[in-house]
Length: 475
Image 1 (tube, one colour):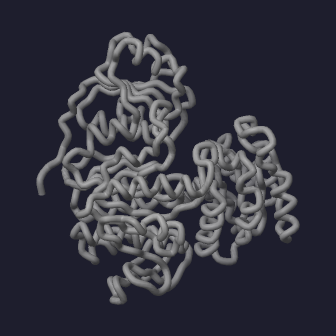
Image 2 (cartoon, rainbow, N blue to C red):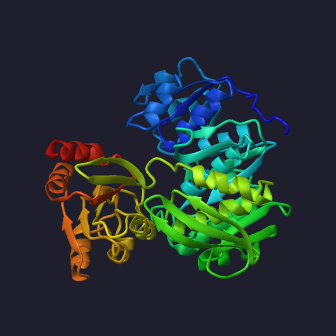
Image 3 (cartoon, rainbow, N blue to C red):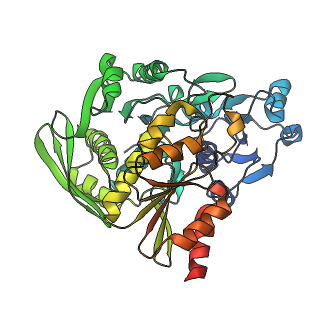
């Protein structure tokens, strides 16, 4: 296999907003490619801060024109930065070359590689992480950049010598100077499309605009490329209909392409069978549970097979995949209570995550603790859908909306209404605004053998560790 290690055209790179998930991963890639890397940020917390420190990458606190006084060869501007960011302004004024994060990935790392882009409203982080692991375990030495930390590697990126580069394709806007989706810069040769739903309400006015964004990605796949898509999703089927490349469907239940069926689920994961065009491909095991994860697995099977990985190697990799931090991650057990961390925030993701947790833990009492903190969840766009997302849970605690003022007046999400709607559905639901009060409630009322699933896309005030400490103190 030919080596594809990078020789970068730049030596010294400064990243604005370096602690973002994607930016921190890019920093690691640049450092491994031989660049001298540093960056700046304001909100610094694990796991990204830990990863950067361990790599010896310097992180400057806050944003300042002085950070560019030594004139780096390139400034990469994360999408956290606005036009008024002092470092973005300074780079433009001083004529220092600058790129967005996706531009930098496309120009510096994807040339000459087989880019496998994993896209979709849900599941792209887990799917891209699993894709990277399967190729790695099969000895293909891929590069990857994923929006979460893979537990098998304890990092979110890799610069490999193989020709495959797995990249999580985010539909969110690229930067203040490029409002198009990030994935348009990723030069796809193969695409996995997991799902298409309405999300990112501050960027997309409606579902039609979301569909159009994904169509633009599919238009980039060359005629000799590959499009693997979830045929269980009607929006996905619509979006892929105009593709000019090979289209390969996957899904649960009967149908053409790659199909999966769960044989058994439990605390150790699930056993499942995979068929291809009606013929058994293999019977595999995974530590993950849930139909949404089975679908993610099927998409990976399809691409891995197309890239020449044998069924046995795919199965071995599935069984040894340790998952990603913040994706159904067991953070600890104290006083017999299992505390799990998950990133779920969209109502579809909340429902799927709770179903998967129920598959794993069966009849054990399940708590859901939910913090609305994305730009979409701050808005009332999914107000009604959330009430139907918690059916698989026994006790529900909803925290205050994080920075509600960031949503337009008159279209803000109402936690009080959600709790009332859940109670009307017969659910035991409470609104507990502050983290210390949530910890106190759970430490007091969670019983041995209970499972507490905490869902937030942020640090949530350190709730997980605080809860485990409080439970341990009780024990």
